[in-house]
Length: 510
Image (cartoon, rainbow, N blue to C red; front, side, top):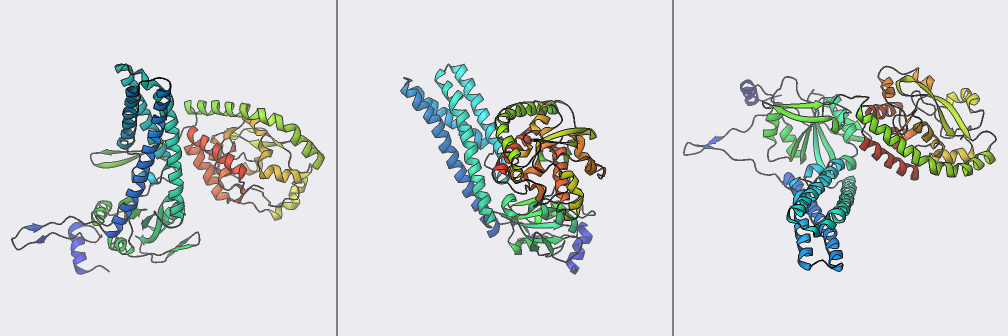
């Protein structure tokens, strides 16, 4: 219930948020306006951010000095004058470090986004390289060329490695409850549940949710992934709840429909109490690369690029597929005789297994794999239906009696899928994409799930590197659709790298 004073404030301001403290009159009759003071919680947050940033500065400086200094040292050995070598070190190191600072590559916001941080580091290194190159040409400083050709490229790679090391350390600390943003999530129950699913676990996102404030008046606590999140306060006491919990981040999952100034008023109330007010993206499963922000006469706008399924980007993807497939088929051809011998010794039958799958635009194609099952596997399937451990339309068994001894090893290491690079080379598949479905699975798709076939199926994909058969049907579809709508060549390369790691440490493969 709101107090009489709150009711008066609501009548005057039209807001159900707790009123902002009004200026007080002094003995001289003038109004006393006191700026919000930094709370102890906010100061702790700033302290660890500052400490982490300092370590980044020290590491960056060390990498730059080593890269530039080593290049200059080689120049001294080859007869370059000491004065020119010193000029190379001072100018190159200063410009490079300055670019890293000017492009905000050590901002606290980047402590959660490796992609954005890496992009900033590469951009800063590229700018430094360009400026040094121009100075070298304009001033005739030919001694700068080794730094341009060797020092900056190698140093840039070293910077990416050190930044990755620091991110891993930060993630490990957050998994232990340190260096994570204590977060209060505000919104309607359904929207808050979606945010909890996205933010948990803490070590991977940097947000440690310690409380929830529901705008729909529901006081029942929320449980997710075995963790109970308490529902505290209400729409009129968000700032007070944040202060009591000692949070440094308030995340708005949704806003009251009849409160146009809700965010602005709340941000005023949180001044001095928290470090950031975060608005949840109302466009779920949309990658950051598709979103841009702008302001028109003070109106903040979010632009989301609509997905397209043809054009230059797909030409680049196809080119990458051909290159990777052609390169992969060479070592595959070398190990095929060995695998053929093992498969033949283990069970009678052919080396390869051919099966009809559904590709892009619903077109059937024949997929090729190393045989990992007995030759009568399809005939045995009907008798095993009741033992299905898969979800949705998928059939999976952890101890499928149809799988041969060698087949278990092939599946565990994903070696049975290597011949699919031939499907990639001839254009039926892509290296990265959704899982290629069987015809009877597609017959059970609704319009929503059918979007998986807007692109070519892949040998690997988000499904492959995120748990494979351990995933539920809903999670598998969600990951495939996220890929379909948001894919990029950069993400394809990242998934390929994660696939290589998953083959070494397999999970969910059976």
